[in-house]
Image 1 (cartoon, helix red, strand yellow):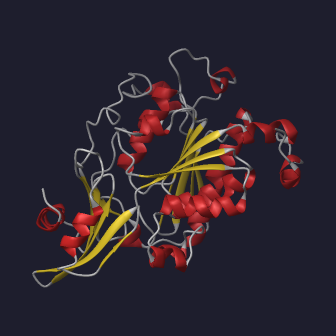
Image 2 (cartoon, rainbow, N blue to C red):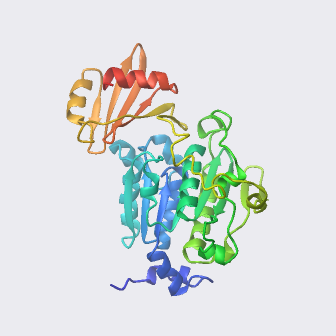
Image 3 (cartoon, rainbow, N blue to C red):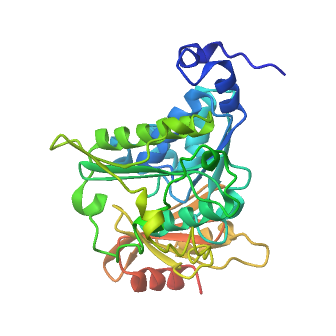
Length: 363
């Protein structure tokens, strides 16, 4: 069935778009990793541009502190305790009914990222940690999918488009002569935990988030419309407070290095070599735990809620169960997801989070 393209008229006037470019967007599928500060801007702009299918993956739910910079959410979403991916799906449905959105309420990890990326034309970074970025990089290189890296903290953001080298050298970007080094060509290893500032320790300015994520989308639109020569070959760094813009020439990193990923074709992060069952969440004073579920693959919220009501207020939906718990004089918020994940708010210590889970949910 023919789609009405009139809403994209201003975009179709641009060089490199036209009707052909717009139809390429409508036929494309993009994986958006994370639906927080970066991810909400990315999903919003991609939907308005007419990218036909968005797969939005995020493990988290909405809090009041998110609203300063996460543009798809409002106070009612916080009150309703809606997961970010689902709230984004509902909002995008109102923005552009021509766009299909698949909301994935799950942790992004080595066991599921290849399935999430299946059939996608690009992967776009909206996450807040290097472990997931290296995982996305492995997936992009293995599957031969462009990956747009981006990150922002404080007043500084960075972004870079990865057009991966493939074993056959026959991708459209390689035929155009514009393949770029992968993330591991540039950063051999992820920085150790605690070495980099986070939004919790350094804060984050909303405009830098919008600038970096908008730039990511701009690069993605070039990729999706096949405008390979227009894709920026450098890594861009912007500090909105000091008014500085830097471009790092990284193209030689592939030629001079012996990257284990794109040259060695070893995908250590996809193999789970560096995966963790516990994750300290940026800006949340919280720890995520990945726990096995029951025989049917789902947690029994009714049974668990009945038990937890003896310890505090419990709210539940089809997506999650949340309980306020006071333990040894300390206040915690325990959130359970149907897939077995749990978020324990009120601590940054994995040991403490595991203890709360074991005590109130069970081993």
